[in-house]
Image (tube, rainbow, N blue to C red; front, side):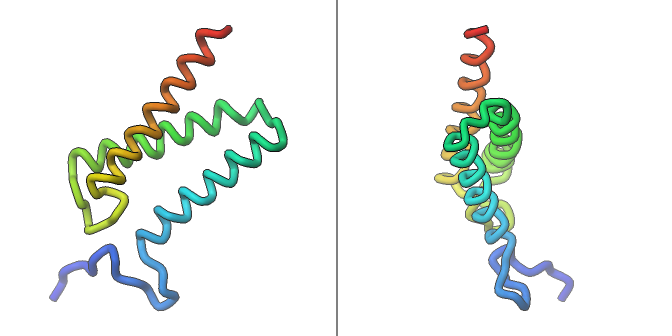
Length: 100
């Protein structure tokens, strides 16, 4: 059988594609906290852009291909949350430009 394994299938180290999705949320969240805590305002805009592009692409994929590969990242709730995160990033960027 040439069918690919489900996304929830784990490799020999116990990792799955879903592990990467969850790790990305954690790493980006820690980076955001570090930017805030250390007052690294120069990094705020790139941080927001990365979130808009990354989670916006996850949102678009989730709306176009619901439950893609069985990944939680593309289920309805995560798609809504990815849309909210990307949308709030767009609002933040718009507000930043308006203040200048």
